[in-house]
Length: 186
Image 1 (cartoon, rainbow, N blue to C red):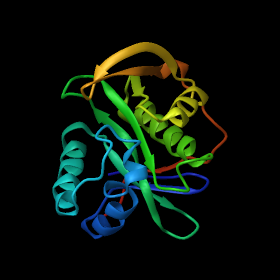
Image 2 (spheres, rainbow, N blue to C red; image 1 turned 135 degrees about the vertical axis):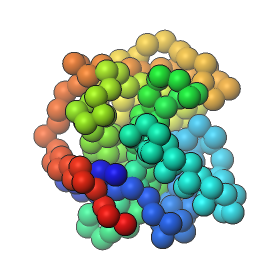
Image 3 (cartoon, rainbow, N blue to C red; image 1 turned 30 degrees about the vertical axis):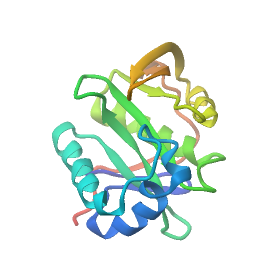
């Protein structure tokens, strides 16, 4: 699985050793979980099964969620990636970083690296994103990335604002983007 270095982040695959940190930063964190469709913390005992699902998605589709780590100290602060929606052809951009990292430029930095990978390496023609209730910051991030509003979509048992970005409309940022397509060996 590929790894990507940006100015401040390392996007890498999850390992079983990440379970506790991932649970703390994302899955059992009520603030971070508001950035994800289920909106509420997952039970700690489900983390291993969720991690297995993340790895299975990578194996099946060649893309998925990365662990997002701060380069400065190696702390796992969240997740970012691309996921198939409803087992169909649509691919959704998702970013969830724990406080205080969920605000500021880090979500955009992670999202831009994910999009670049999706368009350049995976060869996706289009990526979508939604704005969950109470997530106005996501709308700002999607727009800064050049994503265009496209009405609403019924997803996750809700009608949500939909944003889309086509490969030809993607604008490369000035952020560092260093892919390691060989990935980790662990």
